[in-house]
Image 1 (cartoon, one colour):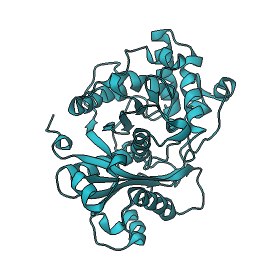
Image 2 (spheres, rainbow, N blue to C red):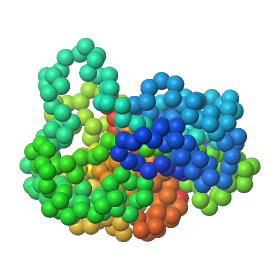
Image 3 (cartoon, one colour):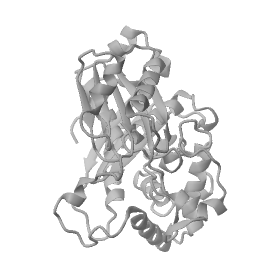
Image 4 (tube, helix red, strand yellow):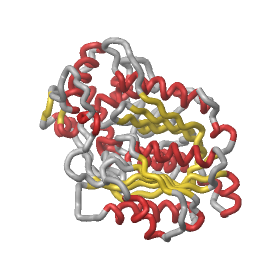
Length: 381
């Protein structure tokens, strides 16, 4: 792996902001994005004129959306870039901001994500002219239902034990004012409305709209601008990888997650079992189990029993998806990865209220996206 610039120049998240994730509405993307950006600036205690560069993660809006939105804060002429990396768009925006600060190119960078559904996801791989065996007939929830069936068979896990992920995450989301789903659910409710195999509606994430933003800054900027350093959360590592060739039957997303996480934790000099709070790409309940194991928090086949025993609850050994995860917080695509970093920052500051993981010092955020691409960030209080 190339050198870790974040170890050479300390880089911090100093401001966070959201617009609530919600069903598609008449709210413009400009209002969504500006709500999050203004909240992040206010949280950091800085002005828009202090920001030197901006990255906007978006997968659904189309070209040219960033400047027209951010110019409402003031036409300062700073460089801006839209970042599209499927579900990892917001994560990649944060990664770009961190690298720009760590390299010394800038001292204060806005990383944000904003999206609104426009009718379909518009994913390009289906238009690549490359045939595959299933020919697009297996929709995502069926794909993950098959993975759940394989996992249950291999490890002697019940459908209810997989669904316990959703039970936990809906409970967490009920205390998150920015979540799309804010309701505690019973196991009976979680298991109702099957869609494919054992996969049910409440074990699948909602894709709506929303926005999230973080301000990334150097230590020098914190001193110069008078930012409260006690609320600054350091980014120890940021690693992005894409899939390579894997063996027959090997789960691509989990294998890619294991590789990316291994590099991220090595660069941060952190053992995965030291992580106090973790946000993962749990678009479907089975994914949280697969990725938690791939990230190295436990051995293959152990995650389901650890969820059932409460070890991944708030107050447990590691709070898993304390925001509610994609299952309850929601997955508006562009903002999702940025929102994960904001949630980890809130947790490491000790400002998460009813969702607070006690004494949280180390956090990680993980997203995968069509491609496949994976982004992992490791942060420290």
